[in-house]
Length: 129
Image 1: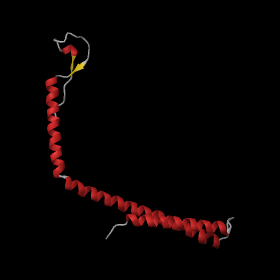
Image 2: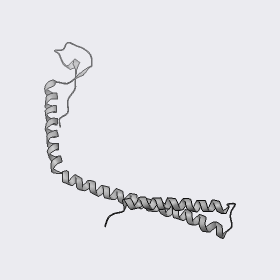
Image 3: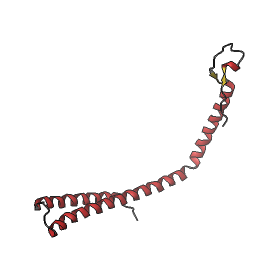
Image 4: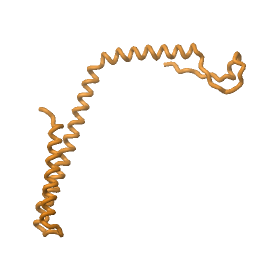
């Protein structure tokens, strides 16, 4: 693509103006505009030809994103289950650590609920085989 070349008003003798304003010649600007229009038409044709390739790439990346979301949901669900086990067994084995049984049970129920939610969300992103 050709670039427009700016010319200062001082370089143009016909204008009779003596400041440093940049101007562009109309003939050069029309040539650049015509080139851009031709390229736009070419890109439209190429876009129609390569639409199938783009759709293939989009499907590939959508599949990769869904897989990453699935793995992330599974990791968070595993973390929630770890917290549940932590509250369920640890304090029973080594004493209460200042927590009463109702508090521990609330924590176990809380982490179980969140683990179940994350597992349900992971099922939405699971790949169909």
